[in-house]
Amino acid sequence: METGRLLVIAPHPDDEVLGPGATLARFAGEGHETSVCIVTRGDPSIFDETSIERVRREAVEAHRILGVTKTIFLDGFPAALLDTVPHSSLNAALRGVVEDVDPDVVLVPHPGDLHLDHRLVFESALVAVRPARERIPRAVYTYETLSETDWQAPHVGPAFQPTTFVDVTASLDRKLEALAAYASQIRAFPYPRSIEAIRALARQRGSAVGFEAAEAFALVRDVHAAGSSRLRGGEA
Image 1 (cartoon, one colour):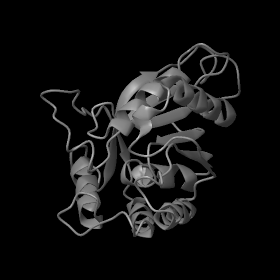
Image 2 (tube, helix red, strand yellow; image 1 turned 60 degrees about the vertical axis):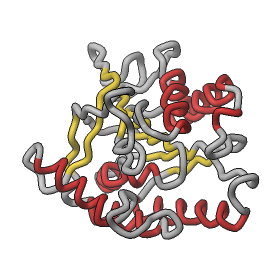
Image 3 (cartoon, helix red, strand yellow; image 1 turned 90 degrees about the horizontal axis):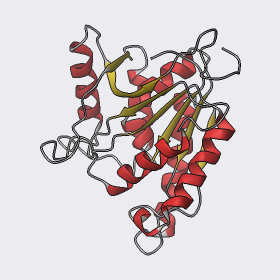
């Protein structure tokens, strides 16, 4: 995965840490511009206002720990009710985010994740990055999210099959610190959304490719135009 402006699209607060959190921290630590878009907000019909505001504060703190340059909270997209919103509205909102951030690399949830919100965000994200504009992201990858990707039914839906591994040996601790900031979301091991499970996955992904720790991604698209690292125009 080449460096550049990085955008992570997360269906819910904590997905951006559970999935590519250490990669975010590594890119930020190397001086690259990093942005996170949190798509949904807790709906009062399911979540009380106190918990909704708490998780947003936790997100801000987690992003501070990771060194995220810009946090974007979208409005009008209720968590666990995303299928009640017109798909065209989500397409347009994510297209606006991509145009504003102008990323080189976009990380999106995996289409086989158990949570329907994840699958809908994946589909709209691909609409947002389709090659129909002058400036589009050079590369798009999906990330795995413990408690979603690992609970899928791979014999029924698409399985997560990593193609790219990022060495996060030096940034794993920051990911774990950021995850701890999401105190309302993490639980005790052996629940997958736990410090121990996240560390174990990073070690396992790392051992598969000779690193102490790694995060895995599945490539959707990687385009290199002649004379530029961008598809069309723009600086390298």
